[in-house]
Length: 102
Image 1 (cartoon, rainbow, N blue to C red):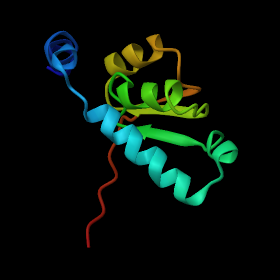
Image 2 (tube, rainbow, N blue to C red; image 1 turned 90 degrees about the horizontal axis):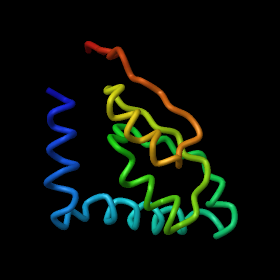
Image 3 (tube, rainbow, N blue to C red; image 1 turned 90 degrees about the vertical axis):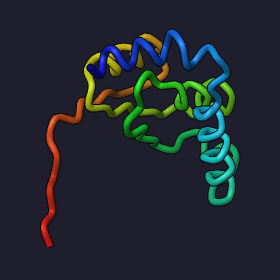
Image 4 (cartoon, one colour; image 1 turned 180 degrees about the vertical axis):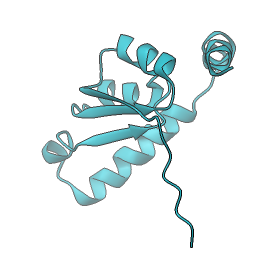
């Protein structure tokens, strides 16, 4: 099912003007600028949780110059799509959930 959703997204949603990933990357960069000098923020260690195909991280790398990006997702298929972009330094497949009862 996840592979089908990924395929539908890549074929129909992304090319039709989807900009959520751009908005997220811009907000992240603005927030990082509040706490870090321009040069030092480029080396921040960023974990893209639920990276999917890496759309937001692609913007962080290409537009804003971040160069220390790690990808985390629950889908091996999505991580493979993200790997094709050649922007991530590390890949993590999230395979279990921690449940805290209180």
